[in-house]
Image (cartoon, rainbow, N blue to C red):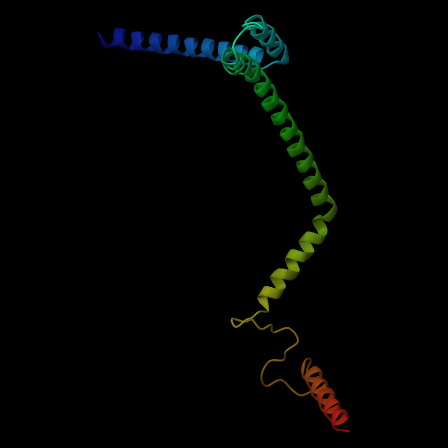
Length: 166
């Protein structure tokens, strides 16, 4: 008995998939045809045929224009416009991707070096935000690298103070 239920369930799923595929194809075909300028021209002709005439009251003309002409014609025109905007956006996106790839090829080495320099700078930065580049560890001899730089800067500062006093 369960075998028959399983087969019926499988058959129902298959029918549902076929119906869904048909509905998808039909919706795509209708959307494609309604979303064309040819359909907009056809709707415009149909709307003009429904024009109430020159002897119609202003209210009838406004009603025809808003309910018939605008709805029929603008539907297709808006769909065409959306398709065109989507295609332009795709082209811009593709061009941007090509520019980015070119820039990565041209400047990849520079970016790699820059990343290494930033990583090196981060490794020389203390917790309080000061860098340890050019400083000498505590207890290093007077002639060690960094000490002479500090001594020179102190001498230069002293020379500047003397020059300012004169």
